[in-house]
Image 1: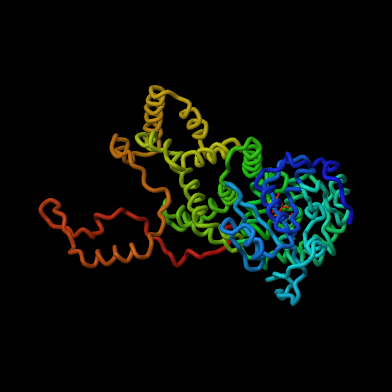
Image 2 (image 1 turned 120 degrees about the vertical axis):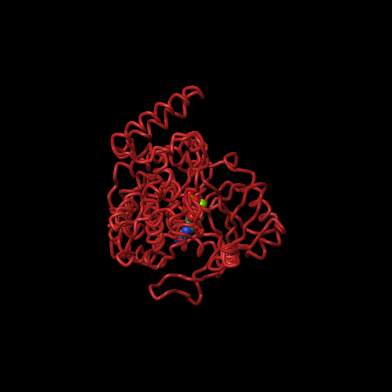
Length: 484
Ligand code: ATP
Ligand code: MG
């Protein structure tokens, strides 16, 4: 172990937020050892802006709770951790960990539970990469380096601690972390890792829960170097493990979306990580739509069903939370609305909550050479810059053009263009909560059948003539299968 002078590593307390210093100081004052560890130290040494700071201590979570009282909450089962609230920030305080006494592992050697407190040396040995295992005591102005990690930082090399095969087997997510850090820091991967980083090894990711894989995928999407990591995911055969039905091929659309995401992060704009899922799954979605259309399903239903199918398949790898699923389906549904809007709905569409994401998506498609957008990306782009008068003129012009196109193609109902309801139907119909559904069906049972008078003869309200005409389809033909 070597003790480095913090100032020699380019570190100073001035770079640290008061929250982490408060935590370190309170623990030290109570007689415990406390360090900053992990990505925070690594990024500061590299001159990057750390995402957050993690603390590590020899105090057990219960002792940390004693120090911070109501500002502290103990969380986790597999890894018990203390969360300390310092001002508006939350600092994760971990206790030095020893190797599990009685290993609680899965059949493939994966660690399932371990809460054995240990020494700093033991804690060090359990971390993943050398560059993530430097312990910084800001008040003493020292960094404890157990494995010449500082050289790996200088040489820009990502090196796993211990035997790489064992470390990947213990926790296959370290494979994803390898690619994430290599891309984020622009580091090379040590040869001993490359040697064992085989497609067979990546199979171990099948044992990881889809929840954890979703979280990891989000970290990949939002680290600011998505465009750099995508080809790596393909080269190392991780792509197949993460994305069930997305062919491992980076289309111009995907590439543009990745570059766009990285740029937004660089300039501090927010991003919705589900947006990139919408991009990745767009092609499988269209293919699934076509599948249903070929079976005679009406377009709106084909889209709804295709959306559900594609997301369900993806959930076998990475479970997408419900709110993100809804977002993705709404962005897709917006594509139809934006492509062929009813003139009287244009204004309302442009203020819809999902307009921005839908429009960004449309424009990305168009800029990637997708001609099926028929120039509507540029149209909406221009529309947003216009004054109210210009907007009105643009809508009338659009209306005329639309009517002309319609006359050309068919003599379908043009009645729609009457300036009536400006209301927009919900983009995605969410299933109602069960209680409400039950109430409704009960009410339906209790309600007497209403009748409508049509030209003297009475027609029951559930008469087929009053229902929307639907193309008849043979659902027995609709099999759930791969989307490509
Ligand atoms: P980021 O910049 O993404 O926050 P980080 O290195 O801080 O990077 P975290 O996921 O916040 O990553 O983890 C904090 C530290 O905990 C890591 O630096 C590493 O020392 C340790 N760690 C995290 N995940 C693992 C893992 N799967 N195996 C071993 N050690 C890990
Ligand atoms: Mg971190």
